[in-house]
Length: 392
Ligand SMILES: Cc1cc2nc3c(=O)[nH]c(=O)nc-3n(C[C@H](O)[C@H](O)[C@H](O)COP(=O)(O)O)c2cc1C
Image 1 (cartoon, helix red, strand yellow):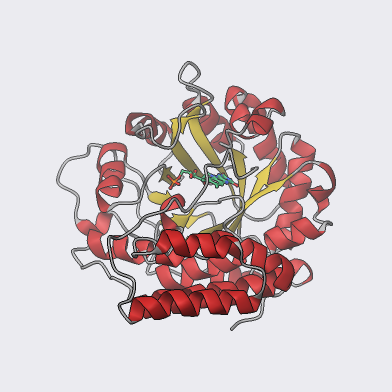
Image 2: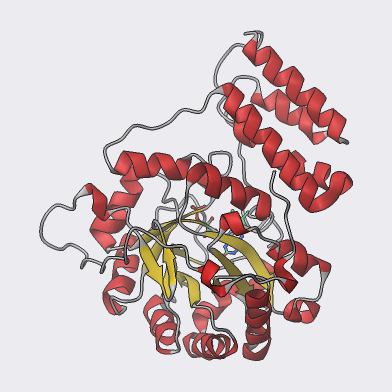
């Protein structure tokens, strides 16, 4: 197992930042352009500034989930082109990267790169300082959060509240670009709410001030995850943005059909996937296979068990046993979703108190499954909380 290292004092060779792909990113096609798209149009390398991604599938930032353990698994098992840390607050002491929390959030491994790290804040100077600290911590790309819809974000003028202030977004991006040598990107929504769809203004202000890619969660700030994404809004952003700037689609991009629609109807250049990758890191590979006429891969029970064990080892390495065991309660049933008996297994994991408990519970569950002692219907559980509950 690779040991994690704190890269704050060891940013590595800048050349390592660039992961070479099969070639340069293709120029985006105009949405609704002539001719049926070929399968290879959906998945392809893409460049964000000087960072070359081998493919255009990206793991979304998710507070409480996308720590180094989960990112590494998404990269190794799924082969996604880019991973992202959860947001890092450009408020208070974390700004200069001097807190333990900052170190945990930004800890990263060479094998998961390239990696985007995300700034959450509203004061241009603090966001700029944080961007510089993230670069020092090993970020290949630095993203600005203009999408977080939780109450705290709205009240403090951060996250999706920034969608109401396009000019201010421009000021933040400008300050971040000046503070770092890394490409700066913006993750946004279509607007603060349905009455305030400011995606074009925010996209323009971002790009004019130096943002090198946009990711559009194609919903407004008050829309719940269940609301269908609005690809027409995404298409507007794509049309209004220079072709050299990749526009990633986000929001339920978890099926081949969703990706085809985002490309065919909106001209998306890449796809960011969040909740659906939880418990299914094979998803990225399966989408790539499906979109190029290949077959989906079904992991065996023993593979799921092995991945769960690996995830636990990584979490222990990151947090130590006491906290790691608590953190792992949330992930323990990730790789068992859809198996019979998973609800009871999840219940057992809520009481997990030690490394030994983990071994006992997994031995019992997987052993029973393998011996055919658990039968019945496939059971599905909700893997990820809504971001409003994640305290993000
Ligand atoms: C638990 C949770 C935490 C999230 N944390 C962040 C975050 O830190 N930064 C961010 O930009 N978006 C965050 N998001 C939003 C996701 O990145 C993504 O935009 C959203 O889940 C829609 O994509 P999906 O349908 O593929 O999940 C979070 C979402 C969830 C569910």
